Image (cartoon, rainbow over all chains, first blue to last red):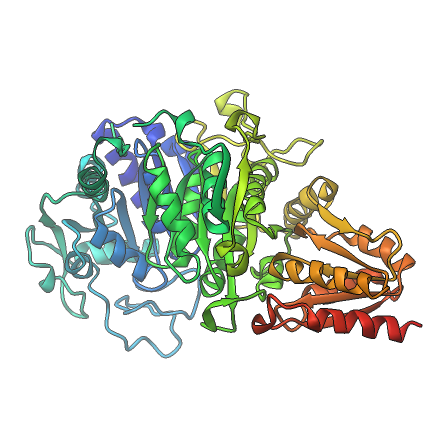
Length: 240
Length: 389
């Protein structure tokens, strides 16, 4: 089973939330076995667009706990991600950061750090600092782990499931042969300024819980603003 | 909070088409609006937001139209009736998710207030160029349902019907509107909410562990739905899938998948298609029109009849699926069709195709500047009669 799914399972378990309320929204085709393994519903949507799909779900039924597993966050999903962070939308976003789109041989992600490149002439583009991008756009719960940091990742997921607003967990992941490489080349630096967690060749991958702050979530802000203007006539989005 | 039954309008009200559309959505049970503002569709959004906050309606301005429709699809799977409102450039962006909506069989409504294109075009001018986009805009093979109102009353009624069709057929349904109809104000008589027919979604009633998201009933080809988060543990994907919703990368599964998606609408098109006919019984020339142009076509038919020309009118209430049978029948009886459109020929080709050489088909480029006038349509009726004397 995929390491991230394993951590997700553990995270849901640790969070103690009702499993059926958690729904996985992906832009990547996962093995459908995940559904039975996790005991949740799974929506495989269009490339890079899982975040707005989950946004609609959450607002239409705030009791749900959408978890977005997304690969193309910095490319196709870039604008959606920027605005979800800005809104502090009440969802969990797990970025499956593999630098290279393994399924699409020859295609390069924004920045290629892996020792093996599927780009025929190797990538020359700089990696995008996803945690810093999230932070800059207003995201207040930011962490990064490699896929082999199962316990730490599960812990971040279980905390995220209880937090209001958007939580971003950047997971350095790739084909199984590279997981060990990333894990060994990572360095734990909790509370590190996201400016300093850029991924560069010949440098350790910085992992940890980088940022955590309280800020009104989208649903809280939505309720507050409309109640202020419309008074008691306004029907709030009830989360509980 | 007002009681739900108190929020609906009933009886006589003077409303614009846009206002009537928002009221229709509320009456149909729509409680989620995902949108990105675009001219000339603001008034629908504004009205819906003002009204839906009295009930448990939710609205969100997304970052673009791609995400607006994605949010609508996600919302619909929770069991909330959902819609988006847009215009040409936004509708273009939505095409990716029209395809996902069709593939995931997600009920939702897209209100497209057509404006003059191409690209950004004339944002406030009446347009009619999105007809084929509604039909073929997303890649792959599928059928779509599209309706074209021509009055504020129809903006109300067809919006309700669009939601009913979307629930009945589990598919996105498009309202192809325009500013002429949208800004037209008239007194309309809104029925009591309890007298409005609302189609309920077909829900799965079996054991949770046995639920298969794309296992369909043979009689209507529609798979029953469940809302997200009920513990059915289901998997759906935009990839070619089997009845479990699992991706299956085979030609046979592709056929199984797409064949039914097409047939669930194609084989039941008689339940969807509606046309309105006037004086077609003895007509030599029949105008085929829809939306704003139909108002000018009505005038042209009257003028032609006053001059002794046997003209008739067929108005498309349903644009897609296209009323092929009726056009073919008429083609065998009449001399010519005249098809005025606010574009350079879209429905014209459908009429020509369906008449199968039985009747001459004349196109009238009824430019946005000519909307409100009927001279060009009358001229074509006369030309058609001259050609067939």
